[in-house]
Length: 129
Image 1 (cartoon, rainbow, N blue to C red):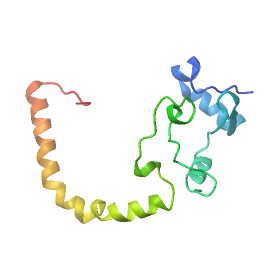
Image 2 (image 1 turned 45 degrees about the vertical axis):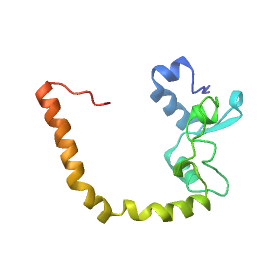
Image 3 (image 1 turned 90 degrees about the vertical axis):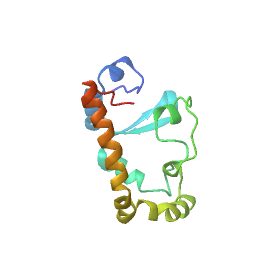
Image 4 (image 1 turned 135 degrees about the vertical axis):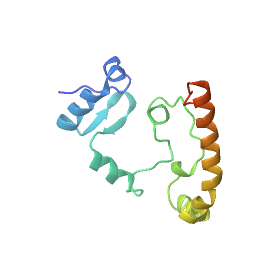
C-alpha cells in the first residue's frame, strides 16, 4: 500500500513513481498529517476543478498554501470562486481577446528580438532573467 507524503525525501527526489503508485492504488488519498486529500488522476483533478459547489480555490492551489500554510494566499483571479471570479473575469476578458493580443504583437516581437539579439551577442542567455 502506498504511503504518501508530498514532502518526503522520496517524493522530493523523484515524484513520478510515487504518483504512478497513487494513481494505481489510491487515486483519492487522505493525508492524515495535513487533514487533506490528494487526487492523483487527471480526470478526477479536472472534475474537481470544475466543481465550485464542492471545491474551492480560495485557500490556494499549492502544497505550501493548503498543507503547510507557509505561503500566504495572494488575492488573484485564479484563487477566486464564483460569483466574484465570474464578475472579475468578465471585466478583464476583453484585454485577453485575440484582437487585443494581436495589437500587442509588434511590441512583443520587438522586445523578444532585442532579448535574443543580446543573448546571441553575449553567446549565452539567462532564461530566468
